[in-house]
Image (cartoon, rainbow, N blue to C red):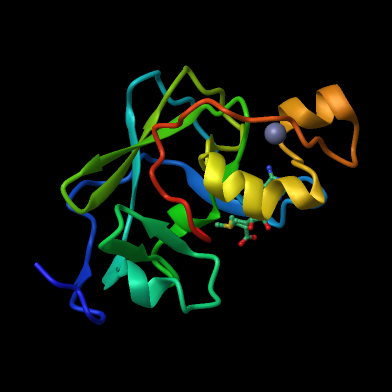
Length: 166
Ligand SMILES: C[S@@+](CC[C@H](N)C(=O)[O-])C[C@H]1O[C@@H](n2cnc3c(N)ncnc32)[C@H](O)[C@@H]1O
Ligand SMILES: [Zn+2]
């Protein structure tokens, strides 16, 4: 299938986990997605929803709310209903994305306590291009490098395939 432009908007097929809310995150991270209730390891958390657009079109856009599925298809996640777009990056994430066709499902990677912020690993390409130059402000890097954040070397792969702006 060729996605030369925005083709459709898809609502989530699954009900998101209860108790999710958007709040200001730590300094330097902007807004973040938090849970007000505990989430069990392996539980479905939320779907990253939006229009399907071609990755070549996505590459020309300025928004940071893009999730690249592959070199052909990207999900444009800027719409208000997609609170998954506020999930910030961590080098020690508590969530992970799984691609199911052209759907992006976020699952808990470990048990998450009430009040915790949700994080995914954005992947090496995004990290090296957009996070590393300003210092990673994830909890792990703040713990290791202090509030200016860290610029750790990254060479391992990631479950996340998005490499763009998220
Ligand atoms: C998809 S947005 C996540 C939501 C964003 N915090 C917001 O308020 O819209 C990705 C952007 O959030 C910021 N961000 C996410 N994780 C970060 C981290 N670990 N360290 C520094 N900035 C981060 C960066 O500006 C990144 O380009
Ligand atoms: Zn980090």
